[in-house]
Image 1 (cartoon, rainbow, N blue to C red):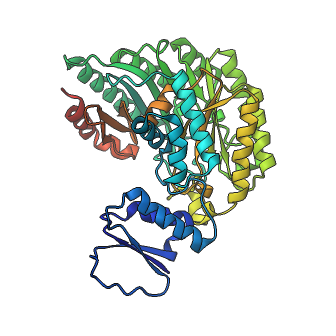
Image 2: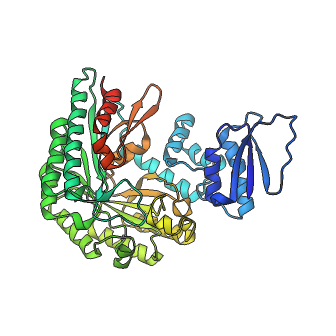
Image 3: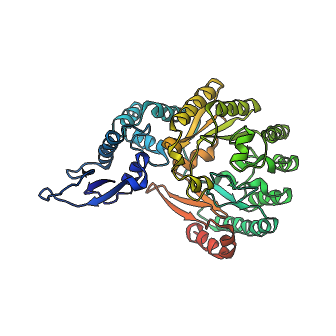
Amino acid sequence: MYRFYLNKVENDYNYAELCRVFMQDDEFETIAVNFDANSKLCLGENSFLINASGNKEPDYIKLELYRLLESLCGCSNEWGTLTGVKPLKLAYNIFEKESDINKVSEILSERYAVHNSKIEIIMDIMHYQMRNVSSPNTHNFSVYIGIPFCPTICAYCSFASAVAVESHIEQYLNNLIKEIKYMGSLIDSNSSNSNQIESIYIGGGTPTTLNPLQLDRLIESCEKYLHADAGKIEFTVEAGRPDTITAEKLEILQNHGISRISINPQSMKDDTLSTIGRKHTAEQIIKSFELANENNIPTINADLIAGLPGESNEDFCDSLKKVIELGAQNITIHTLSVKNGSELREKDPEYFRQNTDMVNDMLESSKEILKSNGYVPYYIYRQKHQIGANENVGYCKPGMHSIYNIRIMEEKQTIIGLGAGAIGKVYYPDEDRLERIANVSNYKVYNERFEEMLLRKNKYYGG
């Protein structure tokens, strides 16, 4: 057991997160202490003092711990000291302070020990966004709507989703539309509110588990109560599972002018799909793309996961090349995240520490393949328990990025969250601060406590 004593550190959480990149939970302990210069501390074997006295900035304290961990474990991490989910936000904060984009690379390297491979991704995304994306208008907002149902639960998933049951879906949808209506009334009644919707994202779960009539009702409620013209704003509907996509549903999306859908294969290898709990085939994925193109959906996103059980780099690259051939304009490359509560984590809690070298190869290969086919990286985020402490990167054909994905990572815009598992965030620009407003995650509890969900909306959006 390694013990890291953190002197003059008020909260050891971020330091413990950094230790977890290198060690299992039972291999280390972080202990916040408060010793002055005259105190005597007797350190036992495998115990170390990280001294924050002398007005050291937290960044440098964490860097000192990182260098110690590198020495103890004989390895490094390409993201250096960074453990948060939004590395791009840090890069922009540096840029705003220094007013020099070249300083961003220098500081990420020297102060945060980020490797050049990750700095290159950050800089590519910053350059793309600066050239192609307008600054966030703090008077505008985005809307996230959660549909917590799927045909099956994937082995790596811990989202608040359930296997679809028709009677449950109908009850849930009725309440969700009531919440949308209520939110619309709050917006309308606020006379000082000149805000406009910039984007709507219907996610999940799998929204296309709704039947055609239900899907039509949901989109109509957004148009009616939120005054959202689906044909004039970015309006995304996740259609992640090919076994839920039909010509009738896609025709409904086309009729409403939906601009973007996600068809998320995760892999184009049938054996892998079966292993992770998917009940569809690669052939059904191909058919879904064909249907979407026939219905003239302007932008199709596809998600792939690096590090799925049993896959080689060759398998992963083959899936990526097939998705490119199918014509996806957005492709998001996820590193497998083995979440708490997932089937995969229950079987092997340390799975995310395995196959790091191969996953690194997958990510490097994906970058080369996508760039050679005209895609550019446009947003990035990280999650806990990702293999190799890596990242998720969204690539797009130039000009075909998702503004919702960018705004959610910027954290400089209000996001209204509707439905079970939805997390809203109110942005206060004068303080550059977000306040989180979360609905309950379980759809049954959402139905039971529905009035409470409305009261939460009234508190933050009611005037």
